[in-house]
Amino acid sequence: MPLVAGVDSSTQSCKVVIRDAETGALVREGRAAHPDGTEVHPDAWWSALTEAAEQAGGLDDVAAISVGGQQHGMVALDEQGEVVRPALLWNDTRSAGAAEDLTRELGGPQAWADAVGLVPVASFTVTKLRWLADAEPGNAARTAAVCLPHDWLTWRLAGSPGLDGLRTDRSDASGTGYWAAATGEYRTDLLRLAFHDRHQPIVPVVLGPAESAGTTAAGALLGPGAGDNAAAAFGAGARPGDVLVSIGTSGTVFSVADTPANDPSGIVAGFADVTGRFLPLVCTLNAARVLTTAAAMLGVDVDRLSELALDAPAGADGLVLVPYLEGERTPNKPHASGAVHGLTLRTGTPAHLARAAVEGMLCALADGLDALRAQGATVNRVILVGGGARSEAVRRIAPEVFGLPVVVPPPGEYVADGAARQAAWVATGTAPQWTVKDTQEYGGTPVPAIREQYAAARELTVDRH
Ligand SMILES: Nc1ncnc2c1ncn2[C@@H]1O[C@H](COP(=O)(O)OP(=O)(O)O)[C@@H](O)[C@H]1O
Ligand SMILES: O=C(CO)[C@@H](O)[C@H](O)COP(=O)(O)O
Image (tube, rainbow, N blue to C red; front, side, top):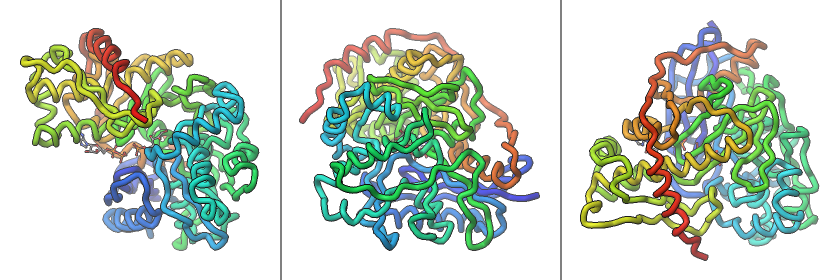
């Protein structure tokens, strides 16, 4: 029974799962924390991967490994393959001005949507490169190659084989802003535009779904890897009509589609998936950490927060929490902060605040669902994944906010599982047919008033420059 490994190098931690390539049975697993902050040296991801792999009993006996990772992070490498500066992560908003400049320079949002299926916001790699060119020209000139977190880890697993050995996959390439999911081609003109047409670093070769990125020193095949959301869709076994809602550091709403998205409003990003199809996706900057922050404000843990939230009535008697704790990407308000509206003698209780935090976080994601529908997605049910999906309050309140049945797979690492499925595909030549069992279904009567009061409060929340 060959074993395969899947890695999720996400914002807050690294997880490794080792599964049976034929049955998909979980054999071993491990995890290690990442440092806080929106600027992280990639060496920290390597240390965490090493620690998580050791905890999972090592990788020497696996036939193949594939790496899923947080999307968009800018990893700049010099001629020797050394990291030029700490990576700027997807949730670093310092390139918001660069995003505006790039949007204008190409001729506006529609021009970008037509070119690469997305409209620049601070999250996307192309804007981080423009920031680098403007703020750190010396580092920009030293940048001989640029890649993403999962590309860099795959390259390290392959023994750092020179800059020409860098590999990526369609799903992560589609989040750079200089690779078009619709055509499957790099837009080197946009890569050059990021550097004011003065410089063009090497970018990784883009692999197809079952192509190998090389081998490790121990001889394991390396899968193409993926952006974490695309890996989660593959890991959770999403079917047509399913929309995944992931409540991790980011909140994401996405589905697998046969055609690429083109949304000039910039709300839906036109990413690619891991099977050769597409992955229209909406992303918020504020999800699971809204819950941990609300819990910290109340001096409780997340389990108690959940109990408190379920003690308050739907709509929290009008208390609304707009959760822009890290600024926001959807809507594009990089300089906004969070706000609480509707505070009265009646609503000033821990239960009301807990409920408002859960509802506010879910309402921002429900706006994403609407945007996905507007792009033509069929939405029959929601599959809830990510750390925040472990919260009972989130599971029970989600159907009231989304107005849809919500399915929750057993707690697990669906990004790492998706990567393990890729590894099995590369190792065996066939996409694995592993099934996800024991899902729980949550129904409930929709409560439109929750979204109505949120929409009103959202409009009152300002973007502070
Ligand atoms: N029971 C729970 N209730 C609420 N939040 C939770 C719970 N369990 C984990 N989390 C939160 O989920 C987040 C981690 O989720 P994960 O999907 O691994 O994030 P990421 O992939 O962005 O690192 C953390 O912020 C953690 O506090
Ligand atoms: O920027 C996006 C998607 O466009 C984020 O979803 C990142 O990919 C980070 O993911 P998590 O660490 O929150 O899972």
